Length: 633
Image 1 (cartoon, one colour):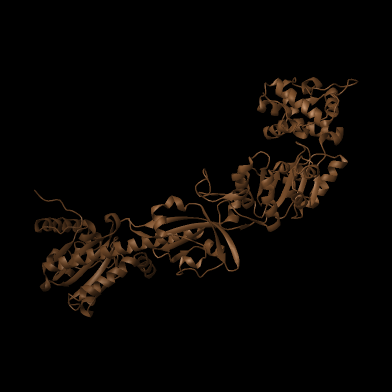
Image 2: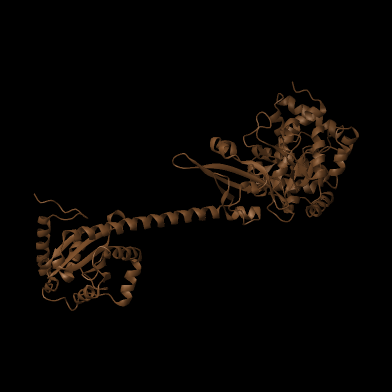
């Protein structure tokens, strides 16, 4: 049984005889001239030939190098060597002058096509067709112009056994030797190996180039270190952060205070995530957040480390997500036209252009945070962080870590990697110290130091951090009285009371502002109900202890109980008498205490529900319960 022909393998004698016989039959059917080469044999133009050579530049360079080695083993005077691409076009040939002339006479020269249809049976045409090494001698060739010659050809394969071309050698029949085919086949395999190596090098170069581009495009700084902690590479962003372009080749210790332990990074990589340090860059201190990762070979050998880092100021872009607050409100968001309110807005506009500390005074619900956001957004440049913190809602023992941050392991329960404080997050922007009148006394001392020095020291840290956040403090407490009763430090009050803005309570702003705000809240809720005359009167005569917050909650509550077209005084359920009836007497504090007591009684001391009904936060309700010494059991 005849063996099948396998690509790239040398044929047996029986296979070769059958192949030649079949090829002769095909050549005859194609009308190939047996005596002379076809005068009209297909040939490329000069431009087409150059284009072909350019497209095959990689393999041609390898063929040229191989031909040089080949001639060291064979006489160039007796043999000529050529290369045909996968389409059969001769792109290269070489040899002694006599051999070259003979090749030209037989049209084996650059530009000519040597397929079976063009020249009939030849080593080159058969190799192209069958993609196996072929050696023909004398009359094996179809055309008599090749009789008296020996020709050998071997295919050259590329990626996934794709045919790239054919390597050919020609000589006198008297020089025939079976080793010639083995040599030309070995040369073809050598070219294939070189092409694979070239392809791998190109792929590697492209991959390395891609990685370099990725590293350079990174929005954070990146440093690669060898096992001796010497800087191998630092990307563009890293050079920008350090204001230096000459760091490659230097030890990481050139960046003072960048304290790394390569073995620790290798054994405990989780401990080297999101760490803080202060780097000396010239005369400037850089506050850096960095993570270090070991670089390990496939054999688990430690090769070095890679560090990604960023200036802490860049982390400020994440402040909105971390703090949960984005400063949406501007001065255009503030609604009101009463003279005292307009005076407060004008003063706030002027304050927005200053970096001085601002003190906002006003009752609960008057819109102190809205004013703070408007002041922040009125500053230049916009886009800087706005970080609020309620000093009265956070327990005293936690307030220091919230304001100043802490290092990893500084206390039980501390987050791994530590945590930046609100002051650090607000760097370059604004920090709102809400309800500062309720700040514990010991924290008042620490805050005073920050105001005096412009520095904070995270808990557990051995360094200080410069802060330049503009401070806005707000409180409902009469700080002057608090100073007199030793509940608030006098020196801190003087530090805070630079630009004081008093926001008038809603009851002092007049009916027009109340009605305007009520209609605004209706539109905001997306409802079309109208306030009746008695409802407008009820709104104007109510004393609004919860101020604007209570007004908004009142409108929202009324929308749930009113009919589809209007809101009446009964729907508002303000709990006061109208017309000629009397409003409950007493001081404002007494009225507030009575309202809170009544609400707690009606809800069975449910703090959340009472706060909702009163239009205040739970933190404010707890504070007022403590202030008025109201029993909740």
